[in-house]
Image (cartoon, rainbow, N blue to C red):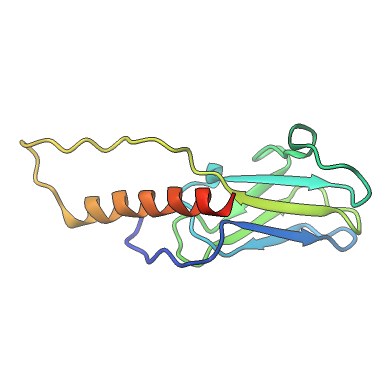
Length: 127
């Protein structure tokens, strides 16, 4: 990921769709398209994480990975007027960076790892 500032915007946004609407914005940074969960449900239905969860590439695509300002999700099939669309940051919480004495540690590596930590914290804070 480029060295970007991680802003204080929550990692969750929700919309009430207009008829046939396909594009919805998110304003927080993600590293990969898979770092989001997207839910869509009819306005008069009871929320169900399992039933409402959409599938990346099958139900929607993502733009804006690796940018500080976020991007959009684009539904493959337009929403029905009144549908509730929710976009949530869902970066897998793991640690893949291992610092080794035989390798030069670069500031870009540290910035990238610190960005991960802040993203994890923001997700937990938003839940």
